[in-house]
Image (cartoon, rainbow over all chains, first blue to last red; front, top):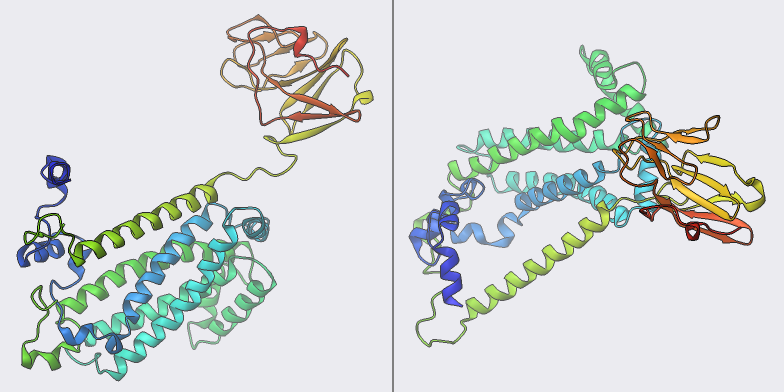
Length: 253
Length: 163
């Protein structure tokens, strides 16, 4: 067993991917995090206090996982969905009744969307009550507020896409509410709908926003948000624990 | 895996749980893979091209007639001894081959492959006769399975489905 696993890990291909050894020592464990574009958003070491489940309830990571589920199921639904007033409703019915696991994909997308709004709000509440928005984390709070608005925007734009009675009137009402915003309201409504009422232009615009603009912005800002957590000194819980220098490394785990 | 120098051959707790985790991960990916494959496999609706199509009743087609089924992509040919369902796709490079009623031949507009009523090549670059779909006649109704394409070297009377 050791021979073939060693043959793989010593191969040139493997070593061109991973420029560090197996993570069973402090150096290689640090290198796992710092040499990987995804992991480097996360700190190399975290304090024991911030690992306590009831401190953060894992709400931030839950929101990120839900975003991942939404991105994957959403992409799969795009394989069967055409954003046209002629086809949108039929395509959704077809997805639910004829496509294997189509109902599952749509339900996962829908419930993950509801869950993401819930989790993002709870995450915000947690950050507020633990005082984690205070300096030096005030910038990240602002990023978080933008992420909340983008999450709501993704939900709102996705609402129209099934093109049933519920969607149609929800967006009619929603965009009329937007129309009441002072000064920019009427123009904002026209920009969103691409016309004076909900029609093909609105469906096209909401589709583009839902599958490209908002998810792209979310991806960018989620990356910034997580990276900023590390740059601002990890979870806020760490501060209390710093006195005892109880930093979790491999020895204590 | 984590070093277990203490007792060679003994599996540590960490190795054990690592293996369990790894195996669950593999099982999960396998499930995702199978769901993905099933989800992305094209769904062909009943009666569309690629399924068994009901062409009509036997007596609706005269002997010697060639009837075009545009949605189902085939010509239903009735000869003296039975039916042929010929795929409209040219065996050369896939163009749609029209039936020329006045001349009694199939004439491909792309590279002038000519086919007889039986689908055999008269001239042109087509390498083999027009492909066939299996025909089944039940209670006087003709069903053509457009999901199965039969390639052939030449026309034989046993390719006919008797009425």
